[in-house]
Amino acid sequence: MVVTIIGKLAELTGKDRIGIVVKVATILAGANAGIVDISHSTLKDFFYLIVLADLQKTTVPFEKLQVRLDEAGQSLGMRVDVQHEDLFRST
Image 1: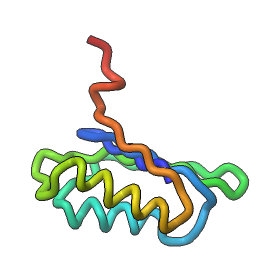
Image 2: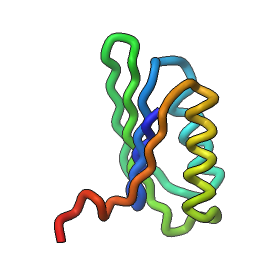
Image 3: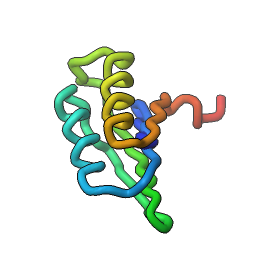
Image 4: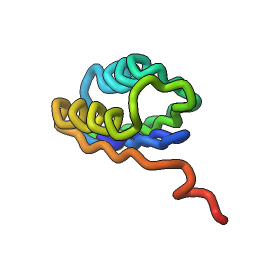
């Protein structure tokens, strides 16, 4: 699962299966993080999800949110990458 979270950017990649989006959305909602934008694509039976999340009002430290998303990815047999949007902005 590659969950790309912006505010933080989270990317989720892995074999397509039911419940991926709801699992990620539930984790973010549980941390009071808002989904600003979400995109996905499926290539054959592989699923790719990018989530841009607003973490300004989050109730969970970023590192803990990363762990929760990573654990969710592992339970789904997917890879999760969480990155800050600043990595994609030029200085």
